[in-house]
Structure formats: structure tokens, C-alpha cells
Image (spheres, rainbow, N blue to C red):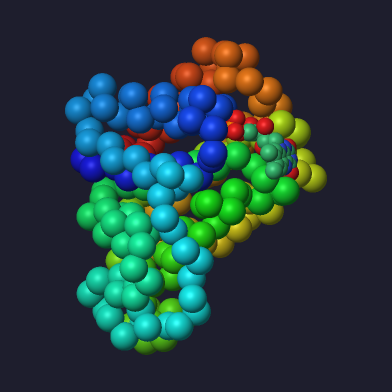
Amino acid sequence: MKIVTIYGGPRPQGNTAAVLGWIEETLREEGHTVERFDLNELDIKGCQGCYACAGTLDAPGCVVRDDAQRILGAMVGADAIAYASPLYMWGVSGQLKLILDRGMSLVKDYMGPNYTSLVGGKKATLLVTCMGPIENNAEWARDQFVQYADYAKLDLIDPWILAGCSEPDKLDDSVKAKAADLAAQLVG
Ligand SMILES: Cc1cc2nc3c(=O)[nH]c(=O)nc-3n(C[C@H](O)[C@H](O)[C@H](O)COP(=O)(O)O)c2cc1C
């Protein structure tokens, strides 16, 4: 299967990248193809709110010419999608929020009679790492993604909020095991 991973953190050696890397490693070991997009290294503008994408039904049809075009195309062609972000100010990173917004081009005729999604039915999840706890801290990020998954008709796997992170060398084997488990769910 083909899995697209969307990494929204700025630290390639950070917690989020480490855990996402373990998910990707498991997928590759199982013979799957993984394509990662490192959002911080790409040119991605915010959604312009022009609704031009609504005029195209069989493709994203976003008219903003930047690297998001490739990501949206890869998402359409993927079997599953894993998003990952550090928790920034109780939400996902700005880098990831940009691509969530641009994902509006994947949804057609929202709430209308022909409401459909170009990523409909694909397994998807969100990994968030944070320094603090889950409670009274990471709920917004989780709830936003759950809403987004519903909107985009994704087949949601419960978001994984990894609380209490300091540095990646402190992540223990139980985290690695959970990453492998999440990888299995993405292709299960
Ligand atoms: C700008 C910024 C905002 C942050 N906001 C939060 C927050 O709201 N809650 C929290 O628990 N941690 C917060 N953190 C800490 C990070 O979420 C945490 O260290 C995370 O694991 C970093 O991921 P990384 O190692 O992949 O960069 C923040 C860090 C930064 C730099």
C-alpha cells in the first residue's frame, strides 16, 4: 500500500520526527511505500478562500501554485495518510494548519446533495507530541483533527497524543511499540 506522511514540525531530530520515523520504518519493513512531505522545507501558502477548487470535481483543483499541489495529489493517490505535528499553543503547528486548510480542495459539494471527498474512506490519523499533559492542553488539536477527518470523510484512527515529551532520547520502547501498532492500523 502507499502511505503518505505529512510532517508538520520544524525539528528533524525532534520528538515528532522520531516517532513518525518509527511509524514509517515499520511500514517500509512490511513492504509498503511511504512518501513523506516535510512541510517546513516546502513552499506552502495559506488557503486564499477563493473557492475556485469547488469548480473542479474530479481533482483538487486548487489554483494556488506551490508545493501543496504535490501533497494534495499524493493524498488523492494514497491508501492512507498520517499527519504529525508538535503541539504549538494548544493546536497543531502553523505548517500543518496550512495544509489542513488547503485540504478544503479535496472536499466537494460540502453538505450538498453530491457531498464527496477525494480522500474519502482512506485511513488517517494524527500524531501530536507535546511537553505538557493531554488534559487542558492537547484537546483542541485532537478535536480539530477529528472534525477535519469527519469533514473529509476520512476513516479516522484515533489521534495519538504523546504527552510529557522532553527530548527524543527519552522516548522509551513502549513508544516504539505503539508506533508499530499505529502503522499496522494504517494498513489494516
Ligand atoms: C512555539 C511552541 C509552542 C508550544 N506549545 C505547547 C503547548 O501548547 N503545550 C505543550 O504541552 N507543549 C507545547 N510546546 C512544546 C512542544 O509541543 C513539545 O516540546 C514537542 O514535543 C516538540 O516537538 P518536536 O520535538 O518534534 O519539535 C510548544 C513548543 C513551542 C516551540
